[in-house]
Image 1 (tube, helix red, strand yellow):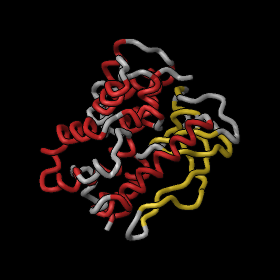
Image 2: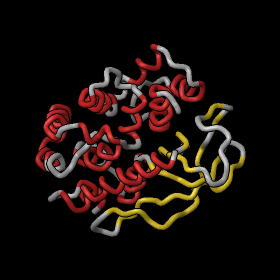
Image 3: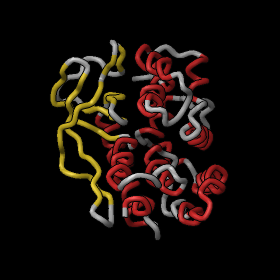
Length: 254
Protein backbone atom coordinates (compact mmCIF):
# COMPACT_ATOMS: atom_id res chain seq x y z
CA UNK A 1 0.00 0.00 0.00
CA UNK A 2 1.33 3.44 -0.94
CA UNK A 3 1.98 5.72 2.04
CA UNK A 4 -0.11 8.87 2.42
CA UNK A 5 2.45 11.57 1.54
CA UNK A 6 3.56 9.70 -1.60
CA UNK A 7 -0.05 9.08 -2.60
CA UNK A 8 -0.76 12.78 -2.22
CA UNK A 9 2.21 13.66 -4.42
CA UNK A 10 1.05 11.30 -7.15
CA UNK A 11 -2.44 12.77 -7.38
CA UNK A 12 -1.29 16.36 -6.87
CA UNK A 13 1.48 16.33 -9.47
CA UNK A 14 -0.65 16.37 -12.68
CA UNK A 15 -2.46 19.69 -11.99
CA UNK A 16 0.66 21.07 -10.35
CA UNK A 17 2.68 20.38 -13.49
CA UNK A 18 0.13 22.47 -15.41
CA UNK A 19 0.44 25.38 -12.99
CA UNK A 20 -3.02 25.03 -11.46
CA UNK A 21 -2.18 24.60 -7.79
CA UNK A 22 0.59 24.18 -5.27
CA UNK A 23 4.23 25.19 -5.25
CA UNK A 24 6.07 25.82 -8.52
CA UNK A 25 8.62 23.05 -7.88
CA UNK A 26 6.92 20.55 -10.19
CA UNK A 27 10.03 18.39 -10.56
CA UNK A 28 10.34 17.85 -6.83
CA UNK A 29 6.76 16.63 -6.60
CA UNK A 30 7.31 14.26 -9.53
CA UNK A 31 10.44 12.87 -7.89
CA UNK A 32 8.70 12.40 -4.55
CA UNK A 33 5.79 10.60 -6.18
CA UNK A 34 8.12 8.36 -8.16
CA UNK A 35 10.70 7.55 -5.46
CA UNK A 36 8.43 7.08 -2.46
CA UNK A 37 10.81 9.11 -0.32
CA UNK A 38 8.96 10.93 2.47
CA UNK A 39 10.56 13.84 4.29
CA UNK A 40 9.84 17.33 5.54
CA UNK A 41 10.17 18.77 2.06
CA UNK A 42 7.26 16.72 0.75
CA UNK A 43 5.10 17.69 3.70
CA UNK A 44 5.88 21.36 3.09
CA UNK A 45 4.95 21.00 -0.57
CA UNK A 46 1.64 19.38 0.35
CA UNK A 47 0.69 22.35 2.50
CA UNK A 48 1.06 24.72 -0.47
CA UNK A 49 -2.04 23.14 -2.05
CA UNK A 50 -4.60 25.65 -0.83
CA UNK A 51 -7.46 23.69 -2.36
CA UNK A 52 -6.67 20.25 -0.98
CA UNK A 53 -4.88 20.85 2.33
CA UNK A 54 -7.85 22.27 4.32
CA UNK A 55 -9.99 19.29 3.23
CA UNK A 56 -7.29 16.90 4.46
CA UNK A 57 -7.20 18.73 7.80
CA UNK A 58 -10.97 18.55 8.02
CA UNK A 59 -11.12 14.80 7.33
CA UNK A 60 -8.27 14.05 9.73
CA UNK A 61 -9.72 16.20 12.51
CA UNK A 62 -13.18 14.65 12.26
CA UNK A 63 -11.68 11.14 12.38
CA UNK A 64 -9.33 11.89 15.27
CA UNK A 65 -6.25 11.32 13.11
CA UNK A 66 -3.26 13.53 13.92
CA UNK A 67 -1.66 13.56 10.46
CA UNK A 68 -3.55 15.09 7.49
CA UNK A 69 -1.26 13.04 5.25
CA UNK A 70 -2.23 9.74 6.82
CA UNK A 71 -2.89 7.26 4.01
CA UNK A 72 -6.54 6.86 4.98
CA UNK A 73 -7.11 10.62 4.90
CA UNK A 74 -5.41 11.12 1.54
CA UNK A 75 -7.35 8.23 0.03
CA UNK A 76 -10.62 9.64 1.36
CA UNK A 77 -10.00 12.98 -0.33
CA UNK A 78 -8.90 11.74 -3.76
CA UNK A 79 -10.78 8.44 -4.08
CA UNK A 80 -13.28 8.18 -1.22
CA UNK A 81 -13.60 5.87 1.80
CA UNK A 82 -15.46 5.50 5.09
CA UNK A 83 -13.74 8.45 6.78
CA UNK A 84 -15.99 10.81 4.84
CA UNK A 85 -18.97 9.56 6.82
CA UNK A 86 -17.32 10.84 10.00
CA UNK A 87 -17.31 14.48 8.88
CA UNK A 88 -20.41 16.20 10.32
CA UNK A 89 -22.36 18.53 8.04
CA UNK A 90 -21.81 21.34 10.55
CA UNK A 91 -18.03 21.06 10.28
CA UNK A 92 -18.18 20.77 6.50
CA UNK A 93 -20.44 23.80 6.32
CA UNK A 94 -18.22 25.87 8.61
CA UNK A 95 -15.16 25.01 6.52
CA UNK A 96 -16.81 25.83 3.19
CA UNK A 97 -18.19 29.08 4.61
CA UNK A 98 -14.84 30.21 5.98
CA UNK A 99 -12.97 29.39 2.80
CA UNK A 100 -15.34 30.41 0.03
CA UNK A 101 -18.01 32.85 1.21
CA UNK A 102 -15.92 35.90 0.37
CA UNK A 103 -14.59 34.43 -2.86
CA UNK A 104 -17.98 33.36 -4.19
CA UNK A 105 -19.54 36.81 -3.77
CA UNK A 106 -23.07 36.93 -5.17
CA UNK A 107 -22.93 33.21 -5.89
CA UNK A 108 -22.43 32.31 -2.23
CA UNK A 109 -26.05 31.27 -1.57
CA UNK A 110 -25.88 28.84 -4.47
CA UNK A 111 -22.62 27.35 -3.21
CA UNK A 112 -24.03 27.16 0.32
CA UNK A 113 -26.97 25.19 -1.08
CA UNK A 114 -24.62 22.26 -1.70
CA UNK A 115 -23.85 21.80 2.00
CA UNK A 116 -27.19 20.39 3.23
CA UNK A 117 -27.54 18.57 -0.11
CA UNK A 118 -24.78 16.18 0.90
CA UNK A 119 -21.42 17.94 0.52
CA UNK A 120 -18.41 15.90 1.66
CA UNK A 121 -14.73 16.96 1.62
CA UNK A 122 -13.59 15.21 -1.54
CA UNK A 123 -11.75 16.42 -4.59
CA UNK A 124 -14.87 15.66 -6.64
CA UNK A 125 -16.89 18.06 -4.49
CA UNK A 126 -14.28 20.78 -4.94
CA UNK A 127 -14.27 20.32 -8.72
CA UNK A 128 -17.99 20.02 -9.38
CA UNK A 129 -19.53 22.12 -6.62
CA UNK A 130 -16.94 24.77 -5.74
CA UNK A 131 -15.12 25.54 -8.99
CA UNK A 132 -18.15 26.89 -10.89
CA UNK A 133 -19.11 29.32 -8.11
CA UNK A 134 -15.68 30.79 -7.33
CA UNK A 135 -14.70 31.85 -10.84
CA UNK A 136 -12.42 28.97 -11.79
CA UNK A 137 -14.62 27.81 -14.69
CA UNK A 138 -16.26 31.01 -15.90
CA UNK A 139 -14.11 31.66 -18.94
CA UNK A 140 -13.83 29.89 -22.25
CA UNK A 141 -16.25 27.76 -24.23
CA UNK A 142 -18.61 25.06 -23.03
CA UNK A 143 -16.24 22.51 -24.54
CA UNK A 144 -13.32 23.95 -22.59
CA UNK A 145 -15.24 23.96 -19.29
CA UNK A 146 -16.39 20.37 -19.82
CA UNK A 147 -12.82 19.32 -20.61
CA UNK A 148 -11.53 20.92 -17.40
CA UNK A 149 -14.23 19.26 -15.30
CA UNK A 150 -13.48 15.89 -16.86
CA UNK A 151 -9.70 16.07 -16.61
CA UNK A 152 -9.62 17.62 -13.15
CA UNK A 153 -11.83 14.99 -11.54
CA UNK A 154 -10.15 11.77 -10.46
CA UNK A 155 -11.49 9.04 -12.73
CA UNK A 156 -10.91 5.32 -13.22
CA UNK A 157 -9.62 3.45 -16.23
CA UNK A 158 -9.10 -0.15 -17.33
CA UNK A 159 -5.67 -0.76 -18.86
CA UNK A 160 -5.83 -2.08 -22.42
CA UNK A 161 -2.13 -2.02 -23.27
CA UNK A 162 1.06 -0.04 -22.67
CA UNK A 163 3.60 1.39 -25.08
CA UNK A 164 6.72 2.92 -23.62
CA UNK A 165 5.75 5.71 -21.24
CA UNK A 166 2.11 5.64 -22.34
CA UNK A 167 -0.78 3.57 -21.04
CA UNK A 168 -3.92 3.11 -23.10
CA UNK A 169 -6.92 2.80 -20.84
CA UNK A 170 -10.64 2.37 -21.33
CA UNK A 171 -12.53 5.03 -19.39
CA UNK A 172 -15.81 6.94 -19.41
CA UNK A 173 -15.63 10.65 -20.17
CA UNK A 174 -18.02 13.29 -18.89
CA UNK A 175 -20.83 14.36 -21.20
CA UNK A 176 -23.27 17.27 -20.92
CA UNK A 177 -26.76 16.85 -22.37
CA UNK A 178 -27.85 20.44 -21.81
CA UNK A 179 -29.36 19.72 -18.40
CA UNK A 180 -27.12 17.28 -16.54
CA UNK A 181 -23.66 15.77 -16.44
CA UNK A 182 -23.28 12.04 -16.95
CA UNK A 183 -20.63 9.50 -17.89
CA UNK A 184 -20.49 8.51 -21.53
CA UNK A 185 -19.81 5.14 -23.11
CA UNK A 186 -16.31 3.70 -22.52
CA UNK A 187 -13.59 4.92 -24.88
CA UNK A 188 -9.86 4.24 -25.04
CA UNK A 189 -7.66 7.18 -24.11
CA UNK A 190 -3.90 7.60 -23.87
CA UNK A 191 -2.45 8.49 -20.47
CA UNK A 192 1.08 9.16 -19.23
CA UNK A 193 2.56 6.58 -16.90
CA UNK A 194 6.13 7.99 -16.83
CA UNK A 195 8.31 10.78 -18.16
CA UNK A 196 12.11 10.73 -18.32
CA UNK A 197 12.10 7.51 -16.36
CA UNK A 198 9.93 8.85 -13.54
CA UNK A 199 6.46 7.43 -13.02
CA UNK A 200 4.01 6.44 -10.33
CA UNK A 201 2.77 2.94 -11.20
CA UNK A 202 5.19 0.34 -12.48
CA UNK A 203 4.51 -3.02 -14.10
CA UNK A 204 1.12 -2.09 -15.50
CA UNK A 205 -0.60 -4.90 -17.34
CA UNK A 206 -3.78 -5.24 -19.38
CA UNK A 207 -6.70 -5.67 -17.05
CA UNK A 208 -5.34 -3.44 -14.29
CA UNK A 209 -7.62 -0.73 -12.94
CA UNK A 210 -5.97 2.64 -12.40
CA UNK A 211 -6.81 6.09 -11.11
CA UNK A 212 -6.32 8.95 -13.58
CA UNK A 213 -5.91 12.65 -12.89
CA UNK A 214 -5.55 15.00 -15.82
CA UNK A 215 -3.28 13.15 -18.24
CA UNK A 216 -1.50 10.90 -15.71
CA UNK A 217 -1.88 7.43 -14.28
CA UNK A 218 -1.61 8.13 -10.54
CA UNK A 219 -2.25 4.84 -8.78
CA UNK A 220 -3.36 1.26 -9.23
CA UNK A 221 -6.85 0.70 -7.80
CA UNK A 222 -7.90 -2.25 -5.67
CA UNK A 223 -11.43 -3.56 -6.06
CA UNK A 224 -12.42 -1.69 -2.89
CA UNK A 225 -10.90 1.57 -4.10
CA UNK A 226 -12.48 1.23 -7.53
CA UNK A 227 -15.90 0.77 -5.95
CA UNK A 228 -15.31 3.75 -3.67
CA UNK A 229 -14.26 6.01 -6.54
CA UNK A 230 -17.26 4.99 -8.62
CA UNK A 231 -19.55 5.57 -5.65
CA UNK A 232 -18.12 8.98 -4.73
CA UNK A 233 -18.31 10.11 -8.36
CA UNK A 234 -21.92 8.97 -8.71
CA UNK A 235 -22.82 10.69 -5.43
CA UNK A 236 -21.28 13.98 -6.52
CA UNK A 237 -22.94 13.88 -9.95
CA UNK A 238 -26.27 13.20 -8.25
CA UNK A 239 -25.69 16.18 -5.97
CA UNK A 240 -25.04 18.66 -8.78
CA UNK A 241 -27.63 17.20 -11.14
CA UNK A 242 -30.56 16.61 -8.80
CA UNK A 243 -30.11 17.66 -5.20
CA UNK A 244 -29.44 21.39 -5.47
CA UNK A 245 -31.67 24.18 -6.73
CA UNK A 246 -28.99 25.60 -9.01
CA UNK A 247 -26.67 23.13 -10.70
CA UNK A 248 -23.07 24.39 -10.43
CA UNK A 249 -21.96 22.82 -13.75
CA UNK A 250 -25.00 24.27 -15.51
CA UNK A 251 -23.74 27.74 -14.56
CA UNK A 252 -20.73 27.28 -16.84
CA UNK A 253 -21.96 24.73 -19.38
CA UNK A 254 -25.35 26.14 -20.37
